[in-house]
Image (tube, rainbow, N blue to C red; front, side, top):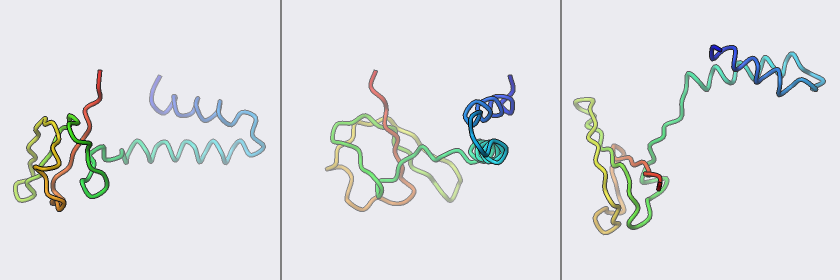
Length: 97
């Protein structure tokens, strides 16, 4: 089944009992296509949220001049990071197993 077919099946199932089935299905399909083209940024900014002390994270530092990033797995220690972290530094939590 293609992604388009999956979206259409999901839309039809979701709105099968709707009074406004056609516009609802159309809006659902358009929203799903938009979401596929615009995935969320999974990297978190230190300004938005900081990891907990001792939390394992992937640290990403973007080199904007060269268009590359360095990645490192670290155990977060707030004493190492000042309260002002540059915008090019992001992080991602590593889930526990």
